[in-house]
Length: 288
Image (cartoon, rainbow, N blue to C red; front, top):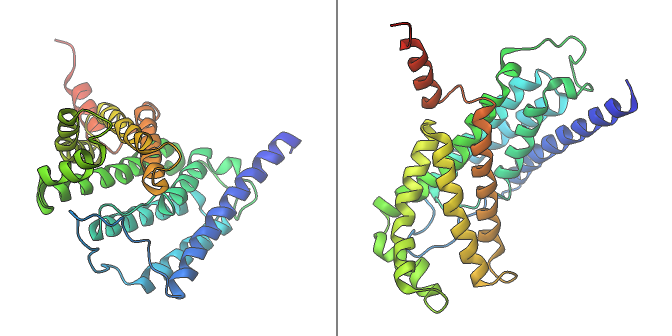
């Protein structure tokens, strides 16, 4: 192995160890009585709902995933299972409170897992079974898996927030007034604030639904990215250095995910309605 390949393999080994440490560390924190971070308190949302999945079940699954990732055994399948776990945790926490900030834990671990999946097992030679590995269906479809998990993650965040504000909150007008008009009326035209505030839940609901289904993925991601630019701009208007870091960082992380979804489908997006419609169109097209 030449020096360049050796350092490449070492880099991915360190990423894998870091992900395993995060997973096992999260499980230990749960055994110590810690709970998942609560959502940002919002007067139009209300308190978190009770937990749906017992913390002990979380901890056991996290430890199992951490050990599999640490060993690197059947790494592509292990990463798929780990990302599936992240999606389950994301859904459970968004059900409890759609404004839960997922960027500080689930988002980071998901990014590590997807980076390992994108690199492929051939880049990480220091793991169990590395010498006997052969390309698998998971490895060949890695970009479709990555697109799927990014779509479900950011789509779930958008859909749950839009759904709650449209159907379960105190109404779109109250949402717009409290989130947009009252905080920013001294810095931006009030009619513009009303338009942005009222459209917010509809944009989030529609973009989230399209991303989850994988329909018009790139167009939906583009709308989502533009929407998030307005959110980031609003926080910068609040104060570039003094705006709440948790909300600013969440908006920036979600923006990066949207930009990624503008690019990922060109590499693979097999498990989506876009791919299904494309296959049907190619199947029906033929010589006249």
